[in-house]
Length: 176
Image 1 (cartoon, rainbow, N blue to C red):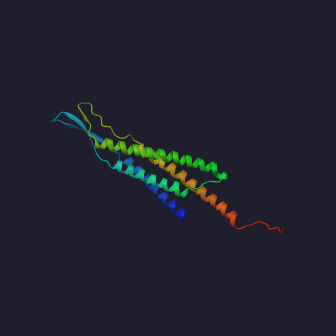
Image 2: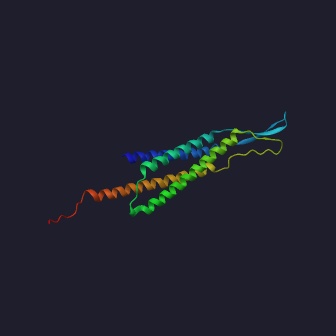
Image 3: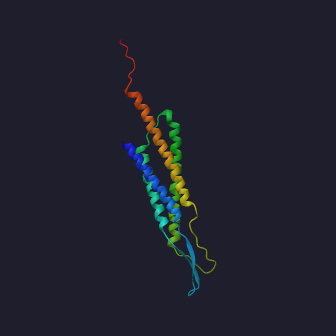
């Protein structure tokens, strides 16, 4: 029961992190060049900083889900299933690190672009976060989530196999 509850909690954390990453992509900061004719210079005005908050929240939720998965859901695999356990763990951790990198870099760059004012004397170009940074994080979240859930299902299946053979049949008894 506890592992089912944890499994569901981790799934919800990963799903909400995925949704937050997609929302961060949709609300990336946009900029426009404004001319100050009194002092004769150009500067960039950015509209919103909400993508930074959404990206950071997705980062935190994904980290919490990975923590729960790592310490409470994954179990040691037997020699019979070690290859698939190692493969799914490698995929899970690689995708997790990719997602965390995308979300962290996206949040930091979006905050830098939004919080600072760039002043130009001519040829003003406002820098914004590239399209797809948070989407890449969302894609990595899905891969990481799928791999960790698959690993959890495999370890549950393995426990059921071990439990079925241990309790019922004791074998034939031959007296001495």
